[in-house]
Length: 208
Image 1 (cartoon, rainbow, N blue to C red):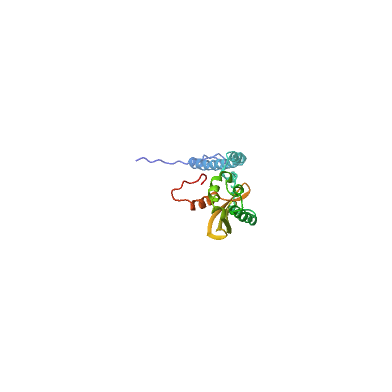
Image 2 (cartoon, rainbow, N blue to C red):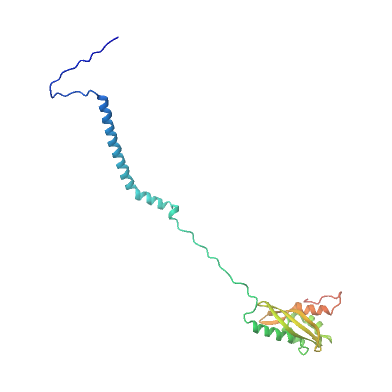
């Protein structure tokens, strides 16, 4: 076993003494340097952030960030009112329906004039002849009981068909249509009356 003896060395007063613990001194010194470097780095990072903040904000705006995007344009839904079920002047239209209906069925109205009160009258001469040409047709009249408009150009008509002034067909149903600015008896109404006088094997007349 070896023994090492420590031998103290005497130095004159004021002489520089070597550091007895060089490792500890270096550790302490290193810690101070580290703190100084850390503090300096933090200060530099803060300054860099302040310097770059406007540039970063500008880049964010150019990139079209979601927070700054304009709101979508709202759509406007167009609303429409209910469809009209009668002419604008319903009272005047009803008066015309009644007058023209009764003129059409008046035995005193000529076949030529009847065409003016019938839908597509200029093409319905054969049907008019079949309806009004015989003896009974020349005695038929009509009296309007009720007019109900279903649209601005069409109406349901309830009427009484007479023969020599006497009731022949009460509560008959027909339709009136507005054509060329005038209210007229519809083709299907006249064709329906003609069919009443025909036998089952009769050929339908042109226009019906």
